[in-house]
Amino acid sequence: MDFEPSDEQGMLRDVSRATLRDHAGPDRVRALIDAGEDVDTKLWRLGADLGWTGLALPEEFDGAGQGLTELALVAEELGRAVARGPFLTSALVGLAVSWDGSAETRAEVLPLLAAGSASATWAFAEAGGEWSTRHQFTTATPQRDGFVLRGTKSAVQDAGSARWLLVAAQLDGEPANFLVDRHATGVTVRRQRSLDLTRNLYEVSLDQVHVPFGRRLGAGPAGVSRLRDAGAVLTAADALGAAEWLLNSTVEYAKVRVQFGRPIGSFQAIKHKAADMRLAVQGMRAAVYYAAMAADAGAPDASQAASTAKAFASEEASRLAGEALQIHGGIGFTWEHDLHLYLRRVKTDEVLYGTSALHYERVCRLLLAARHPVFP
Image (cartoon, rainbow, N blue to C red):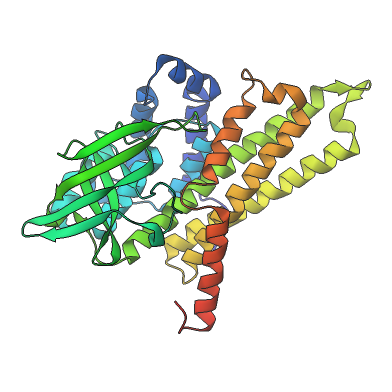
């Protein structure tokens, strides 16, 4: 694998960073909070014009035909700018429909997602449970003309503005995904309060929601696991972007904050902390982009790499936020400073698509299964 971005990937990264620098960031988040707005409509339209919304969708449906690596490049820049918007959740649903949707579903859904005319999100997690297929209690019951979904999902990103909800549910004892219209009878969406002010999370209740046969995506748990891997990689990339901001802002602050007659950056202890933060960011970058490239290449260790990247990147980003707070001192705890927005973001990244403990356990299971195939 070549870890250096291609010219096209470098251009995508640079254009995305410039756009987000001009149209996103902490000040924009605060303005949206004050206005009570759920979606940054202007940024969504700009992202659609730049091709973010169709980046990894097939060209036959007006997408760009790129992969998870390109999505990770955009996710990193979104994390750096603590940007709002359903870009990554819509991208995940688009991937799921591309991989496992029927021809009719692909033709209906993918062109709208690619154009940014509609958004979608994945309803996977449930209250009180971990982000794994072992804790799926929403059920799908087969009927004569489709399925009936019952259950409640939690921490569903951007569900308030989504046209479609991709719901993970148990069907005959195995997890499966079902594409549900948000306005369907029996669907209730309720805003949840959360630590993260840069994202919108919702509870989604499903009370005997009817889903046609054609809206079931794929068969068996493989599609659900593959999609969770993609979500884990993109969340790790988001944490990487936020961690880079934490590093850069902390170094700049250490240059200008004077204590005992000299910049605090001149003290050896601060230099050591900054060097350690830099090393952590480099390690996060290697883990995230190896995982993205492994997924695109269909590598045998793609799932292991996804869990490794998610566990390491989200854990390290959270630790870096703590280091940044220590170096900033009291000002870092104030509402007016941007640091708390990044801390909230990376703390949420630490939970989305599975905690570090969950993914470290999964890596162990995968390694054990590779050596001893009789184990699950």
